[in-house]
Length: 80
Image 1 (cartoon, rainbow, N blue to C red):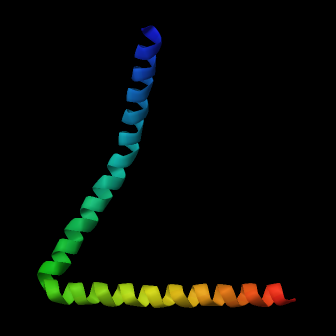
Image 2 (cartoon, helix red, strand yellow; image 1 turned 60 degrees about the vertical axis):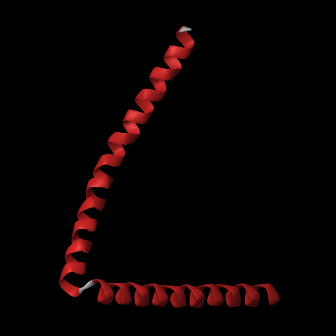
């Protein structure tokens, strides 16, 4: 019984430590969310959605280029 209680207390301590480490990150993310809401109010939902979509597309193209370049380098190295 004592072993089970010790194990439970250790789990509680571990979870409490993890929560303590995550709280600052959560607060930072709440700030980012508030800023994002401000931008949406100023620029309008549709404009922000359009900009986010464009940024995601640009990131996808850049990633595709990076993957293609990596494959090309790998193929060149393999052919040697």
